[in-house]
Image (cartoon, rainbow over all chains, first blue to last red; front, side, top):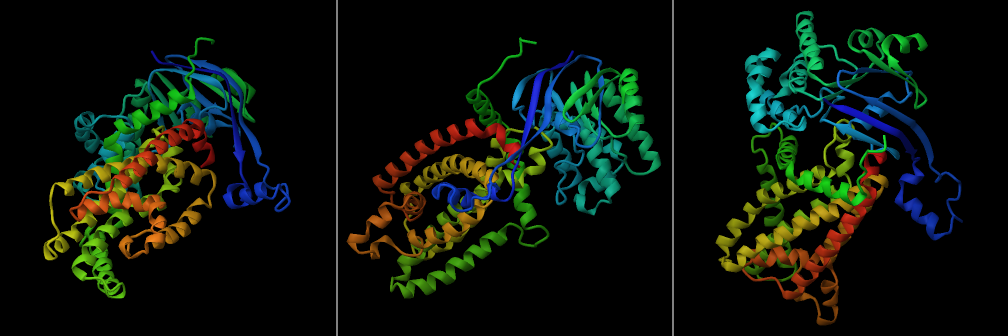
Length: 245
Length: 269
């Protein structure tokens, strides 16, 4: 029974220009009291990526994040993944968070398929024993056979995606975070991948999904959050939110 | 919603460090992967590192031994032990400032303790060091360098350097993420430090009134901690005292900086 609570979460992004990125230029500015290099360009612009966001998600919630580009969908996912710690406000999780923001994360070209299963499994928070138990099942799903002993650089891009998808979806998440659902390989494999993907979602207690495809969100989610310029514009059941969108 | 517990910066930093060390299977695996990526598809594999180090030491020894008019039986072991230590220290320093930048794709996609990446870079450089160390074996045999109980002290030296690599690596990595010109700055400083530190030359050939140049150089003390045991002699009490003091300052300083800026790292990337 996982749950997530956000209490007035704000994320401010500093946007640095070349000068404020340079220690040398900062040093010149300090030592000369701003007499040199005083072109105001050292000032740093702050962008409010999330503004006072509060909501509560409970077991059974499948939440779609919708909004235009730059509305804060990815930032919100990264805050939920604990990658960005909010500049203000608080978050509380009951349950383990599993972010699947980039399916290809940690896939190494020089390592074999099996070695990649181990590394990716460890990154997903599995223990070595758990990975060993799952390896046969993952191998069967990817249909890569003997290729799994070969370096990943010998794979086609479709095969690489199959491997990455196979490992990434082998977990049993409590709170699952997804950034755009990926398409995988040929048509026959797509059917299989979709089945596995749906199983993954069914197993999860809470799912948060960001997508530009309204169809995907309508199919998977029962709730939605409409973001606009970093603010929650609307949060509610899927039908009500789309009525506002 | 007022029942959300808040943790202090110190507690969060401490958790990060603890979790980072406990994820040893991740950082060791990633550091081996780094080695493999660097020498992929070459027949000798990582032993290219050993070979290039061997060529450097064996040719430099011959040239500089004659230039400094030193007996080769003494100069060769000295140079080999110094170069091994120096290559470890200098590569840790040059890698340090780029640690978080090179791990951007991890830091932005998944929550892992920040310390994991510091430990990854440190482990990678230590693996290279353990490849390099083979270079000194023929020298020890050929020039009859004494191997005794003091030789084991080199493990103590390695431990001290490992701790400092983590603490100062953390400081450099945080600075390097915020200020992107740190890497160039360190690369040019390291050249100067190489000539100022007794790597190629022995402190013995320096006149008495200039000995303070070696005494005041912290790198010379860390180097002594590795070099002397490899040559079968104990490091001086002075070297131990200086490195111990630097280690303690480094632990305190890096923890303070890490606790203060930890949450900002992903924002700066």
